[in-house]
Amino acid sequence: MSRMRQLDLVLTIAVAVVVGVLGTLDVVGPTVIGGATLTTLGLLALNSLHGRSAVSTLTRSVRELGDHVGDQASADRLLAPSTSGVDLDLSEARDIRIVGVTLARTVRNHYSVLRDRLAAGACVRIALIAPEASTVAEAARRNTIPDHPEIFEHRLLPTLDLLAALAAEAATGPGRLEVRLLDFVPAFGLVGVDTDTASGQLRVDIYSHRCGTPEPSLPLHAGRDIQWFRHFAGEFERVWAAGRPLSSSSTPAS
Image (cartoon, rainbow, N blue to C red):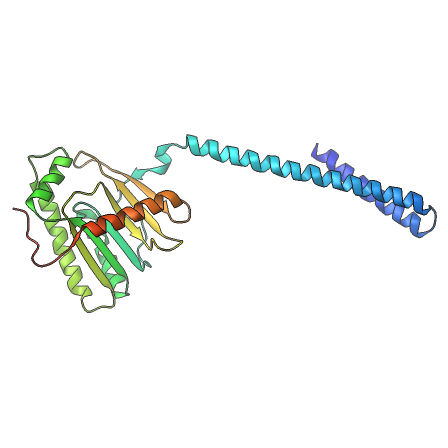
């Protein structure tokens, strides 16, 4: 079909050229030239209409294919085991946002790059559970190990020590470190990079109810996953607003 359309176009052009030459040489009269011109224009218009119809059909088919693939996409292609944000590049970040329960792995894994970014003038905001008996106990209950709150206490206190060291290093630098404590256990973990920009990224960990099991992580990009990126970016702000600033008066779990 495509070859036939190409042949029609070649013949149309050939006829137009021949009639033009014959008209220039006065071999044919104005009536013949006029008729041939209108016929040629009609054929060109028909070809153009057919082309537009083909493009419209192709566009519709691509859209339907995209909808079908989107509906059938496996969750295994969207979710991956959590790496506590290790796969997220923070090396050039100007704004870093982190929320979680104890953040034991996250802060430990990112400590050096967080220090470097603060030295470069970045803003870092971190929210985690308060080191209080009720909050630690709630974290244990959520993980279906209510008799072992000490597990979360042992994870939380080293994180607070690392954050204190990080704050001491950042105190005289151009960056800004803010830490808030939560009196509740967040339903998700999150690491965000420059979330207010078009190139922003998020890693969202979906917490399990079993301690020590792999947790699924959802990567989100500001320019690609607009709805859910905005959702989780907004969730961070809501969690942040509900927290209280970390201070020396914060008491450890007992």
